[in-house]
Image (cartoon, rainbow, N blue to C red):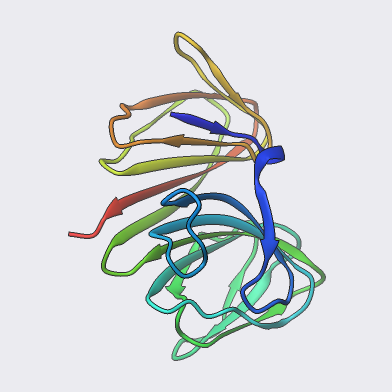
Length: 192
């Protein structure tokens, strides 16, 4: 179990050079954009335009701040994504462009290498204690809004945009949220 603080995340340029991304976690540690198994990041999107392509990568996008974005992924109808939307999954190697709805946004991106890893992303708005089941692989919990306390021998407190990274041996996790807390639960497992 590792606690990752928002102040420790790594900021780096987008693959297409159009902005910056804040890397929350990557596997293996220190992997670059061409050799990761999985990667979780946040990006500030200041203008409409094309998304960077990632060969052989599956991607899930969620809007954290701002009015939202409309994604146009080749072969699909345009998808409107706001802070209230469910996370949106799509192949990162398909041509994708984005149109901002009304001003800049911050988004959460989860990417896994197709054929090697699988992922799911769940947004939880909670106000009472809840049990979060973990997976055989990695479970990553991002505190989006409010704060969350994970009780135990050494309680862990996450503030806004802090993350808890649990490995494959983690058990079920209890969380005590602040009123109206929002968490993103990301589960990553090896592909069968």
